[in-house]
Image (tube, rainbow, N blue to C red; front, side, top):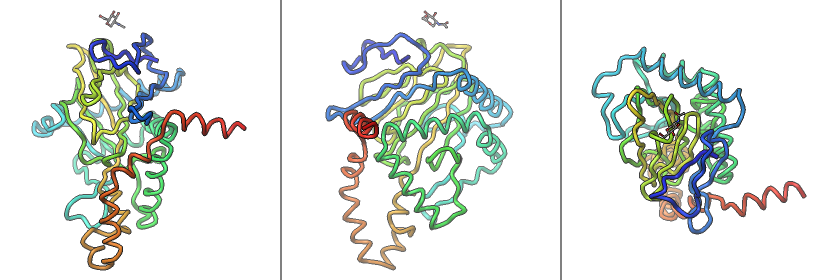
Length: 308
Ligand SMILES: *[C@@H]1O[C@H](CO)[C@@H](O)[C@H](O)[C@H]1NC(C)=O
């Protein structure tokens, strides 16, 4: 439990809870019963709690030891320095590439090598697989397709299917209202909050389109479609500390793989027929994406069939 939803925004499907450990997961479903986001909580044991504390200290200390110029601490998402690590694919690139973190390469690699952060990343992977098994499989299949194309393209965490991670540094990280347009449109983003703060007073995640304000205690995980749902945070109290790290996969990489690991121009030139098929598929991509989400009924049915 541990997800107090502010009364003024309360949806009937999310009654207020009082336990702040954030250990019991709570799916958020749409009117068709589809699980569109999950307050995944955190494993309820001391070992994991210790790991979240150490992960927090590692990210905080790495941030404190780094020098971030002013322009890095002010952007569309908020007033904090963010370091993205992992695979990206954008305009002008002929293949997805590992981002060049330049001066922050050591910092980034240090955090990726941190066993406690790896453990949290692995929990996000497991929760993703549990709550959206088809969407998760879509990520796995594309990851396998990318690896077949170029076996040197690694992911940030062996324990997790996501192509990218972002570390958000500062004393008090909170975001402006935004959508993550780079993320796969119907994909999920895994957000971990970390720090020393009273989660009843600040740090809430606001999901604007769902009219939800959600308590987000230290160590907890939320999975959400960050490209489609506008979201932000409420700042924590003066003197408190909060950082975060997120995992996501850029939509451009999925499109690259769907193009047979070619750029759109390359595919159009080399295989006009397949190019036509891919373009036609693009139009229905959104509906296909929605079909990858699961309903609660479906997940419980699957469990029964495994038992019988
Ligand atoms: C958090 O704040 C609430 C509301 O002011 C208070 O009742 C509670 O005791 C605080 N929790 C801690 C751990 O300080």
